[in-house]
Image (cartoon, rainbow, N blue to C red):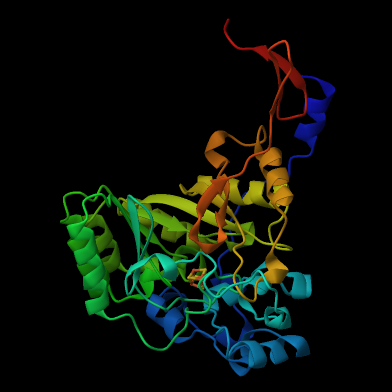
Length: 391
Ligand code: SF4
């Protein structure tokens, strides 16, 4: 082992060895709640916090946060589950990565020319009133405006939280489009969070899609394992997923503090129901924009059987400028991961281009060629290794 390799190994972060339960972290206002109530998704759903007064019962809000909830929430709604708000680390103040993802900030009111209400150009690629098709073989069905929480960095934040609902007729129209187009092989059920729909509607959508012979892959995008993991304690829902297996479930954990006893149980329940799990993190300034944080997160995800799939550069959604990082920041993280964790824990780092131009893979450049045909490859700890292609 050369000295640079051993120096790199010494920089490895502490690995999280045990998980905390949100129940044990619950704020004073829920001290009398039983574990059974806490583990009930219906209880968690009913007790979500929406207003400054609601949230102030659970955590101390700074004056700026109170003002932000009042001024921002009418534009980009606010909501957080008891589970998620319990994960806030008071000792980290306003810089807590959990707090930053769920409590509105006045910075969301900043206007920037490049930001958009529809950053991925989805409505330009709409094929029915609630479905978008940006690639020939894939289609996304936007099934609901509802979510357990309103993530402050959300790409679809201009729609999430809207009061009116997507009708079953609109969803049926999207399914009819899929049935008629046999070049669609892969369907993403998205929103909002599709697990906020009732079980009957989820079962109906999955069964309809499963009966279409040309559909190879059904994906379901949900942040519920992270933001309201108790939803995955519902045996009826798990049974519906199992009957339609395999469902590829893409979830979104962005920070190791989000991996709790409850989330680990949710992921296990999904795996037991035959789901194939992947995680799509969003790279967020001040939250997870360093290699050690993403390394710890990805180790925790893999331990719970959820493969890190994507690391997304934050989309150019309105009100999210303060979360955006440079591309170089993500490249540095990818450089950090290589060699420190197995390939299983290395996601694709991608930018989903504005206006619907699709995803572009981004990776640090590792190869330089010399005029004599020798290639110079840079390994994980920075050594320059010569390599020649076959004659
Ligand atoms: S759960 Fe997903 S769709 Fe809902 S607010 Fe969060 S990021 Fe947006």
